[in-house]
Length: 251
Image 1 (tube, rainbow, N blue to C red):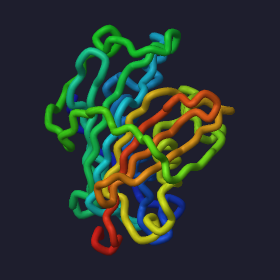
Image 2 (cartoon, helix red, strand yellow):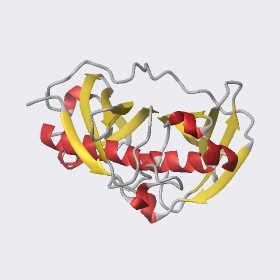
Image 3 (cartoon, one colour):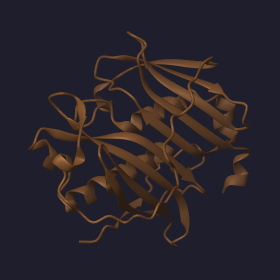
């Protein structure tokens, strides 16, 4: 059993932006799909974990892109489990084009959630042994992301049924989409997302209303984001994005 797994995707028209490049959320969906398929081969898919009353939840994500694929082109995702210690396991990714050129890299940290207590479980008591590949795609220690203190942009959105995953809470890629919707239009039109980091802090469920808030930082091209519950102010996710302008310098 190999710790490395690869899966190919073709960028579809409905996954692209106004320039014909794959949207970041589409790439995050590719990562999730590849990770799920590999987990199934390792015997640790969501369906496997649910037999013992557990499931996977994503704790942290960091995606860094060097260039974006165009519609109709192939994206190859290579993924592997890096480590597993106590409550968290790290899974990393590399993204390639059809010629084998690196498009981007990603690192993620996952926990196993006890469905009854809604709290993380010790991995050793739930997961079987499977091979690891200790090489990192992105060297990220997953330190706490900065707190957004004075928002400049704000958007309220309902949680829809289409936002939910098999665990009946909002899918992790949806949070990225919410945050990116609050980026000023002139930035989205002229710049390119170079990196996105997400720290997931609480669940959002169907029927909730969320507030996505964003502010620029002192670092050029960098924004911090917060996704909060409109009803009680709980912080559901904290994000940081970095943009390269103009976009033509990014391709």
